[in-house]
Length: 406
Ligand SMILES: *Cc1c(COP(=O)(O)O)cnc(C)c1O
Image (cartoon, rainbow, N blue to C red; front, side, top):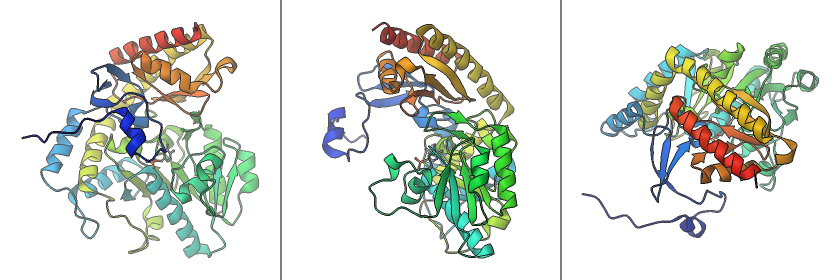
C-alpha cells in the first residue's frame, strides 16, 4: 500500500524553502552507483558525490542492507542509553586510527564544535582561563554554527550575525613562519584542514603539518585536524593524517563517514577525552543506531587495501584526462588534490567562472562541484567505476568544448 504523493517541482523551492540555497534547475529522484536520474528520467554521472559524502555512490548494496536491517531493529534510544551500532563504530574508528575515544554527532560543524569546546576545556582545566586562543587558517571552512564560522573566519559566512566568538586568529595556510609568529602560551589549539576543501582543494605541505605539530607541542596547544572532507578514504588513506604521517590530538570526521546518512565524529585520546566529563557536552541524536550502523558498513568497505589502492589509481585516471582537457581548452593551469578530492584551477581567462562550467557540465549530463569561484572540484564516489570515469569525463570534455568554442 502506498500513499499518493503530491507532485512537486523545482519552482516549489522558491515558494516554501528558506532561500539560503540556490539549487540546480533539475531535481534528482533516484541514484545507483555513480549515476543519478532526474524527474524527467534524464541520467547524469555524479562526480559531485553529494559534496564528498556519497563515498560509495548511491544505494550501495552494503549500505542499503545495513540501513534496512537496522531500520527493522532499533532506530533511536538517545544517549540516556548506549547502543550496539555506536559501540561497534567506535571500536572500528579506534582500531583504525590514533584515537582511543569517539564522540558522535550529526554533522561536520557539530564535530568541530565538539573539538573546539574540548580544546578550550582541556586548556581551562590544565592551565586556566587565559589559555583559550584558537589559531585557524585564512580561507578555512569548519561549518556554519556560530563557533565554527568564527573559527573559519570568512566574513561571507560570519558577518551580520552579531558578535562573533572571540579569542580566534587566522594565519595564512601553508605558512609555518606565520603560525610560529602567532602561536603563544595562550594558544589552546591550532586547527588545520589537511587539504583545504571548500576554498579551492589546497593540499597542505608535509613540512607545514610537521612544523605545526612541533609548535603545538612546544606551546602545550592541541593540534586539531578537520578531516570532515578529507576523511574516510578520500585521499586514498583512511584519514589524510595517515597520508601525511602527522598525528593530531583531535580529529573530526563527517561527510563520507555516513555515505549519505548524517553522522559526525570527533576522535581523540583518552587523556583529552576525560575533560568532557558527564554533562559537559552532548546531543540528542549523536550515535544514533541508524547512522552508526550505516557508518560501520561504510568503513567495512572503504577501509580495505583494495578500496584504498583503487582510490589512488582512480586519482591518476581523473588527473591525466583532466590535465589533457584543461590544456587543450586553455581552461586549467593546474589539476591538484589527493585521491578523489581533485581541484582544477581555472586559468586567468576563466577566473571566477567555475559556476558556468558546472552549469555547462550539467547540461551534458555530468555533475561536478566548484570550490570557490576559481576551482572546479571533483569529489566522486570512492568506488566509481572506471567506465563511469571515462564516460563522465567525455561528457565533461564535450561541455568544456561547447563552452570554450562559444
Ligand atoms: C563540509 C565541511 C564542514 C561542515 O560540515 P557540515 O556537515 O556541513 O556541518 C566542516 N569542515 C570541513 C573541512 C568541511 O568540508
